[in-house]
Structures are given as structure tokens and as C-alpha cells.
Length: 495
Image 1 (spheres, helix red, strand yellow):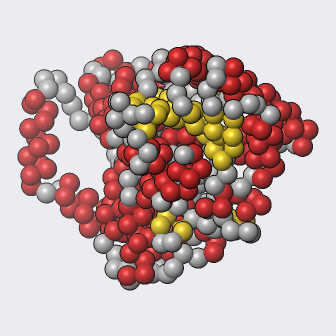
Image 2 (cartoon, helix red, strand yellow):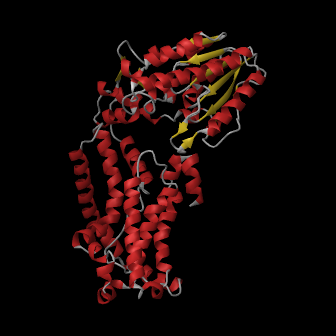
Image 3 (cartoon, helix red, strand yellow):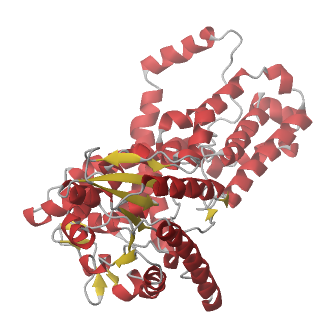
């Protein structure tokens, strides 16, 4: 449980997908069987209160859940605790409940309705099936309409009925399961089967614990689908490791880190030193920069931190749900250390502010751009005053859809990447923000601007597949395989 909470901030993907870190959610329901029945069996009012409170917690969790909420995190206690309370509220069995009038006080009457009992019976199968259905549907259609989403639900339910009757129920009734059921109570003295509501299984509390299994299933099966040679290069690009594997993962500091831990690549006695400084949009240039440096007897030192721009701009971290103070502290220490290194050049790139303010009113966009310009100017001037030259690489385009998912859909249908995977240049390239960035860069001595946008975009369109390679691994980060091809253009711009 503690590891899950910590990783929700430090490594959200691991906290969400790594099943052992979610095991405490299953264990919480199991612990309900250890509560002595005598403690609750004859306390009707207490069972009623536990039942309604549990349902309220589950409903609250459903209403509060959003894309911006760190999950699992502490928030996951709401649905898990709610489920445990509902289970405890049914201790004593339905016959006892009816004699004592428990159904009139607690939620047993509502939860015992045949439709809910039927859903409860199928709940585990439904829990396992819903995610693969959603994943495959998302591959076949960029955006699912409401009817299509309802269709996914009906399909998942139909598959659940089949697997319940053909696999789950026969397996549960097998002889080896019967032996286990008889043996288990003897292992824990005093333990009794929990028979609160026959057939009722409350799975909503265990939100998406099996998504890792579902995704692994999808990946394994899609990889074996027959495709023609014209798609092979694209398939290999999709399967390439992310940019985070090109450079040691420890080189990109996490959200909580405040002390810079630079990484060095290349010979220690190289004649020149270049520092790469910024967020993950600087990190994505690591691969081509290291290759370009190798050709020019240059060592690379990286100062990189997740979601932390080189610009002196305080921001709000949507994962931490607060001001990103760790970024401010890390940035100032990094700038001081870089100046002490006296490198030949500092290369800066960062997630464009233009990508964050698209939906703001015009006046607010203007104010935010001005604030960002001031922060960028402050950073560049700090290096300029110290006699350190700086190069700012224009941010990469942002695509309308996730590049890998869009291309995967075309692979599924054995097609070449279709135009709907690409994005109009006017929308993807943020030319107005780039102009504001260029204005700052050209106003600071010993600073230059590098624009490689034409490597991704034509006159009117920005592409996700270029020369048979997947250019982006999501909406706005370069894929490693394509990033390697940029070593030449980057070398010509820097050396």
C-alpha cells in the first residue's frame, strides 16, 4: 500500500499498472472475512450504517474520479473502503437479515434485486473483459461515440456471460476447488465463509487493477498479426524503445527530486563540453545530440527533470496537484552548476507554452506568453552574463492524436498510414509561440535559435511517419528510432 502511494507521484504508470502494487485492494476485501460475525450479526443499526456509508464512499469515488486526479494514490481508499463496508454490512446471511428487519434499514433489499445479483455474478468476468474491449475499440476508431461506447459495454457483457458459464463457473465447481474450499477454513481457526449477499460481488472498488494484463494481451497478439513488407518498417518503429531507454532513466529526474544529478556521455577528456538542459522535450534530443557529439570529440552533460522547463517560470504540476516548487529549486541549482562547468555550449529545449494555453481567451494567452518570455530571458541572460553560449531548439510539433495508436490502427487493417494520423502545420507547429521564443533568443547575446521543424513538417502538414519511421511515440515526444536520424541536422546546426 505504501509503495503504491509513493509511486503514484514518483512513477504513476508503475503505480497504476503493476499488479503487485494493487494487491492490497484485493486483500482489503479478504480481511473482511476475519471480522468476528458476533460483532455485527445482531447490531442491525450498525450494519445498516456501514452499508449506506460504503455505498456513499463508492458513489463519491465515482463522482470525483477525473483524468487530473492522481490514481491510485490515497484516493483509491474511497472505493476500496466502501466495498469492505458493504461486505461487512451483510454479515449474518440473508435469512437472519430478513427476520431482524435488516432489509428495511440497510441497502440489502436494493442490492438483492435480481438484475444487480446477475451483474454481481458476472462482475469478475466483466472486470476482466471490459479493458481488452476498450483497447481494441480504441484501435479501430480514433474517437468512440456514445453509441459505440454503449456497444463496447454490451460486447463486454456478452463475453462475460460466455466465459462465466464456459470457464469461471465450471472451474469453481471443479473437484480441486472443492478440496481447497474445505481445507481453507481449517488454516485459519474461527474463519467462516462470508455469505453476506449470495452472488453479490462488488468489483467497482478494484478499478482497473487488471489493465496491465489486458494491455500485455493486446500487445502480444497484435505483434503476431501478419503484415506486408511495406508496413514492416513502421511496425519496427512502433516497437522501438522510448527515448527514456536511449539515455539512462536516472538521468531524467522525477517530480520530487530537487538536487540535480547530471549524467555524462562521451570521453571525459574531450576537447569540448555541451550541456543539455530542460524537461522531457530536451531529453528527447539526447540520442541525436550524443551521436553528433561522438563524431566531434565532445562530451555531453545532461541536466534533465520531468515537466521542468529551463525557463525561470513557476508552474502548477497537474500530477502533484500543487505548485511545482521542486522544479524551481532544481532549476536554480542546475543553472549554478552549469555555469561552474563553463561548457562550450548549453542546449535548451522545452515543452512549448503554446501547447498549454490553446484554449485560453486571447488576453490570457498574451499574458501567459509574456510571462514565459520573461522566464526564458532570465535563464538565457544568466548564461550570457557568465560567458556561456546557449542554443535553444524550437519545440517539436504536437499532434492531434497519439501517433503510435493511430499508426497501430493502420497496421491492424494492413494499410499504409492514412492522412488522418497527420496534423495541419498551422495547428501542430505553434508558429506564433515559436516567433515569441525566437524574439527572446535573438535579444540575448551569445544565444542562437535552432529550428528543425521542417524535419517533421511539410509546407502544410506535420507527419507522424517519416521515411517509414514513426516520428513520435505519443502526441509530442520524439520516437527513438526517428530521433537517431536527426543527428546529422543537429550536428550541422551546433558544430
